[in-house]
Amino acid sequence: MSKDGSLLETIKIDGPYNFDLVLDRLSLDPLNQVDAENRCVFVPLMIGNEPMVAKVKATGSTKAPEFVITGIEESFQDKAAKRLGEIFQWNTPLETIHQHFQNTDLKGIFDQHYGTPIVLDFDPYNCLQKCIIHQQLNLSFAHTLTERFVKTFGFEKDGVWFYPLPETAAELQVEDLRELQFSGRKAEYVIGIAKEIASGNLNLEELKNKSDQEVFDQLIKLRGVGPWTVQNFLMFGFGRQNLFPMADIGIQNALKKQYQLEAKPTLQEMESFSKSWAPYLSYASLYLWRSIE
Image (cartoon, rainbow, N blue to C red; front, side, top):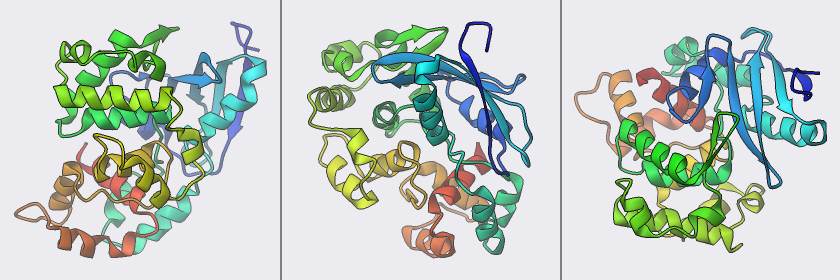
């Protein structure tokens, strides 16, 4: 039992799993409450309609990963542990993925970032809104704009920020977001998606059980959602393993560096490079991003 009366739960998983590199990447987003020195992160969770904050602390090593979870009341423990397992992809066999890339051109960066998992955004709805906000912006301003959105219309619990609920964002006016430096069109997209979810027209939990193509076909109908958005959502909303967003500037820059190209790679070059990376294209994408972050 922890000091606040919540249960302590210890999770042990198969290695490799480098939580320190996870924290390093999570710390790029100013909304994430990361304590790298104490190897922990505070995760905002909505279980049912109840907001709660889970503290996830690493107590093991990359080879023998172990985590202690605190902050969750006993009645929510199982659901919270299941959700945290999804977010941190604790059941993904990273050694199998690592070995897949040992005979590819990406061997070097997979060795350098050994044991780095794909970590999901803390909620699929947040992920979709974040993808919309980040479209066509440099990463620094994208984080700034997202932070303004969350801190203006979201809420805080135990020092951790929660995104505005769909019902809250659905009631916003375009002018409300324009004041935060959103473009008019991007403001319309963010509000429109919130309305789709608040009205029940879009159920992201139901989409979890559908194929990549089925998710793509449904989300692409939404205003403001293009292929890049869907691919990023599938990767960081649902943890799908075989996505390679070729239009992503970061991936293009990473490939330029990896292959010492004079210009950004063409789509034909990218298709050629990536042939041997399936069925783990998402991991190729992640490790390419990591190589330039």
